[in-house]
Image (cartoon, rainbow, N blue to C red; front, side):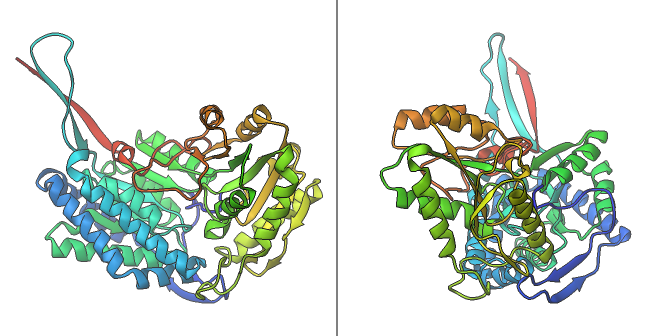
Amino acid sequence: MSEHQAGRPTGGQAEYRITNPATGEVVATYPSTTDAELEQALVAATSAHRDWSRTTSAAGRGALVRRVAELHRERREELADAIVTEMGKPRAAALGEVDFAADIYEYYADRAEDLTRDQPVDLLGGEGTAVVRRASLGPLLGIMPWNFPYYQVARFVGPNVVVGNTILLKHAPQCPRSAELIQQVFTDAARELAAPEGVYVDVRISNDQAAAVIGDPRVHGVSLTGSERAGAAVAEVAGRHLKKVALELGGSDPFVLLSTDDLDAVVEAAAAARLDNTGQSCNAAKRFIVVDDLYDAFVEKLAAAFGAQTSGDPTAEDTDLGPLSSLAAAERLAEQVDRAVAQGATVVTGATRDGAYYAPTVLTGVSPDNDAYHEELFGPVAVVHRVSGEDAAVELANDTPYGLGSYVWTTDAEQAQRVADRIEAGMVFVNCVLADSPELPFGGIKRSGTSRELGTLAAEEFVNKKLIRTAG
């Protein structure tokens, strides 16, 4: 189960509270949205959509999103400080996330008109014309996770706002301050440009309220980034109401090493791919699949690289890794690792916990009958497997219920393309890691999700592709 879950759409009340994972201190609590306030939010998003989609041009919508990007850059220090406190992200990484979110908004602002332009259809016969015209659907509900509080929102909101949809945004209950700051960015941008303020509405709603929103006829779709459990529950509610749903769920991405002429560089990339965001990324490399002749040296060097990481105060400039998002998250990861060891895995390094901090850990000897073989370990834990060659590596890479991202390392260009084609995943990165960019589609298959975010494909998820056929 992914730790980056956003919560089920049915069940108990969401509790919006900031608990600093580095100290355990409860910093602030926030009131949940009442049913009356939620109705006001629905009215605002519905009313705004009429103007936003029909009377505001694509260029005008792009202008709002561009101003949102600018405000992220202007307020980057304040925005970064919020998530350092909320989920323990080291401050340098927090600043980088704010900048990446701004890049995403700018990408869609630059392409607002292209993404909504009519697409001509070449007729096979008859006179006249035919075009596919992209039109917004209406208000959408976004259910977002805590692990990338700005980036995740940007990649959902950016494309959907420029195509004319309006947004109700339920952020993770542990991120109320960053959610509040995003709302202020949109409110200020809308006022400056005389845009409807209901284009983006933050709601601190419970899971039961979220289910009601999904079922409300004024809402035309829902996007969730979270756990399999959350995704299945949201999809179930959406299905009952015949609503479009987009899901980005967990991952257990393989890192396949077949050959290299610079093992040190590969190990450096492997450590970065596993430990980014303190290991709390759905598309982090988690399973390292290494050919026989490189395996022993790879394990030794990876353990050394993990041991060299600096864990500590996330506000300090020299901190590599912060705490996990919560004490419960660290306890859950520790339980998974302890169970893996009890079932036969070997700890090469790490496997210790200090409060919400969990030491970077390398495991070997995880066999198919070990729970950890198929689980997602959402934290700084790498599982390394030995294989005999390409066929065995591909078989092991695909032996997972997930299919989000993957990484292939080889000096053989033909092999790289062959293996990339055989891997069952939504993304394959060849000889590179941490290469996400606004123009690159993001998403997976199998139990990793059903949709694509980023790139131009993100703007295709929640639009009416309307055919207009005109006779000659």
